[in-house]
Length: 413
Length: 138
Image 1 (tube, each protein chain N blue to C red):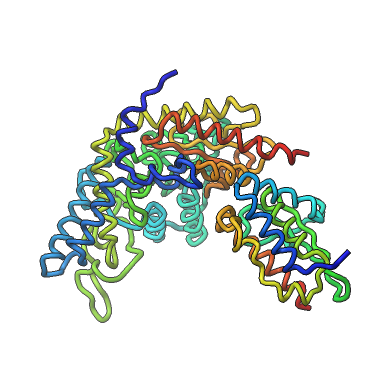
Image 2 (cartoon, rainbow over the protein chains, first blue to last red):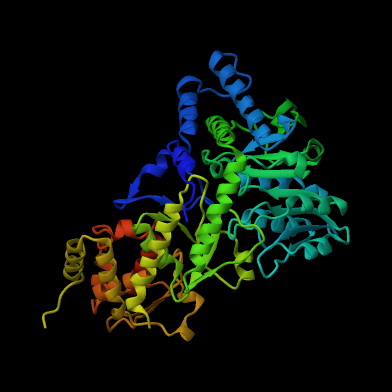
């Protein structure tokens, strides 16, 4: 069967990182659920910022600062536009999804007390699990975990049931699983949370790349995401929040750039978004983030989504053709990641040998131990394609997996 | 048979490893050392024996009575780490505690193992070597 790779080949020219070799082998980069390769326009934008307008934003009365500030705020607008946020002030720049969720968990601390509950799911990355678990420990609120179905989707009935008593104040769930690639019905989940009086927090790190996420349509209260999973740089991300939800949030980080007035006994703080951005922001990161969303937009979200789902299906089918391979879960919609085990082979051994063949994949618990527990596993291999991967790369990765499995056969028994 | 030193055995290992000059042959060579391991039976592995800093599971038990050479046992669930543990077992052999204490391991630094073991695994190996020396320092 022939697959359409022409457009992806064209895209790939924008990603210098994909053109390199490792161990004298052409790189096949299938670790996109961890980090994407960075677009050339992103690198250029960051270099341009550092070359021509490297200065601190806001309050600098000089040309470079003015320019840096203008571009930083334009980045906020472009990022807001990318996820369908109507008000760019509702975009808070931060270090990434983990920082964003921690900011929310700290900021909602005073809103919780014993008798309240926080609801997460067993599909979550630790970033959307531990901050809430710790919040419950600090406040005495109950920590509730929605179980998964046998296929690995969030159990919708259980989710509804766990909300039903009206004690849940926050429901936090991932748009797309970093382990199984399961895409969850976050719009319905946000609606269910609201119906029972809970705030909805979406971990959008995986699945936001295609730009088809529309937070206004999702109607979630908060949406957290990272630039480095959107062909942008590491170290920057954002929280989107509805204005009324952001206004309920306590400030958890204090310092420069976020005050109206500082007195000897008390202080007053700036408006949203600045009150949540204490200290010098990641200005060069914002320049890269802006270029990333503009590049993704130019690539066309519908094409990215369809291609990533199709590549994932192709990969899953290929893996299932190995008799020794067990693919984790069978979710209704899978995108961007397939995790699996190989009978009698340790993931670290296989990944090491695949690495020598130029194939970059990830092994371990993928920072999602509760999810692995559901499947009775403690270590997995994961291949995570992005739109710029080629079908022939999937074929070659599967070939490398076969070689790796066979390599260790001498030591069987 | 002439008694060799850790250093001599290590230099022999390094020379052989480098000569292979191909990652697949080097991995194979490494894995042949698995047979050198004195394996800790599965039911005797405890958390105290677990090697910290190793991304995959590894266990180590050193029996030292201050008189006889150390008796070192290992276990790991990954073959590559078992190969490394086999190399350590081979290199240490029946060396005295003083010789082990003075040993500055070079077999990773001077071979492609430095590139082939990821940083987490290198930390695990460093942790094993540290515990080995601690066991000698009695």
